[in-house]
Length: 117
Image 1 (cartoon, one colour):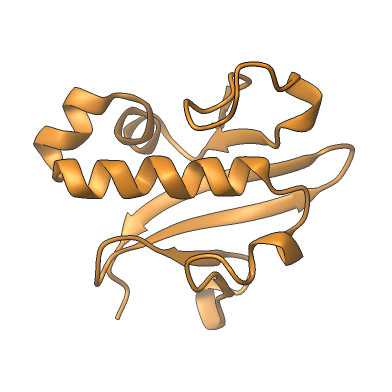
Image 2 (tube, rainbow, N blue to C red):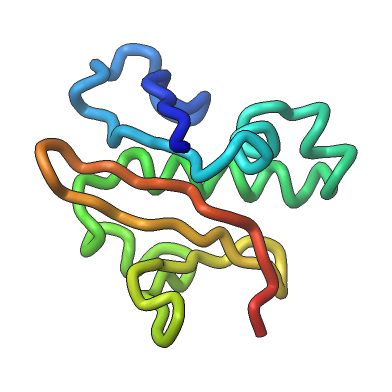
């Protein structure tokens, strides 16, 4: 099940219309809670990690294509079992893993926060 979030991130100007924001979804409720609940994320991870997560989600959300993200946070396409996913740096060694869809409207699905190395 995928959970939809149509609200712009706190880092995106409130004057920005929703159409200018990338639609963002979450793979499950756990990752949604980490990405949207500051108190929970700071307790489970760290304040520094939560800050970086917010920054990266804002960058993903403001992009209208995957090419716009390539030079941000060492964003790169993954291979092997994760060939349909992308990774972007958080606090070393963790990465934010997401999928990018460009069907009717560009959509990023936040999948997980992981150290896959």
